[in-house]
Image (cartoon, rainbow, N blue to C red):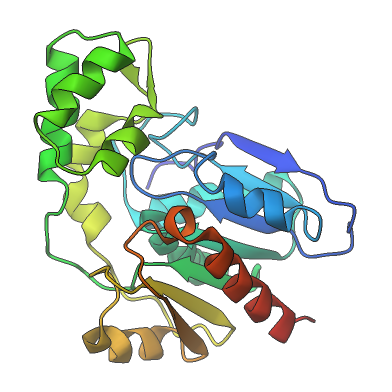
Length: 260
């Protein structure tokens, strides 16, 4: 395994300096801005660290992309910031990074909130059309966001997905490493079970999302025996964008329940 990478991050100080800091982690094709709605609400109560994962945003690029190395990247950041304990809130792929962190640094994570992701190997390629659209924009030599939008509309049906992806399109370049993400996609959708981690975990599921299913309960309970789940009604995979207030209420209830 290669050395951990120094991740790009943003630190938001809080008036409540005694609180355990919260680390916010984005998902695939994302950046540290993606969970901004959560950061703004939580920052009065907790110091906030927003991170760009490797091969995303302004963090370094690497041909290696798996949950072991991404968890090591996070541990490197905790060491850099001298953080003995953190609460982690993470969406999608970021949720798997957070769960992997409980294996490499079990005593450094106090509580965990996983937004619409399960600790399983999905064996399902959900993003091939997205990769095709991203590559088409690059191959066409497009530098204008409006032109990129027009091309992507011909290939992707979901307008929110297009808008989300275009947030990372700057001067004709994607701020995520498309070739590596495609090459390492099996690692991204895959999973190696982590040792049982006996601390509080909240899994938030979008009602209409396929990422957390009843059939995954045994896997979740084996790895996270203190897990509890909450379903956000009438929402898909992007729960925090679709139903931010409901997500925040669930997070606050969870954090308040397990205050130390």
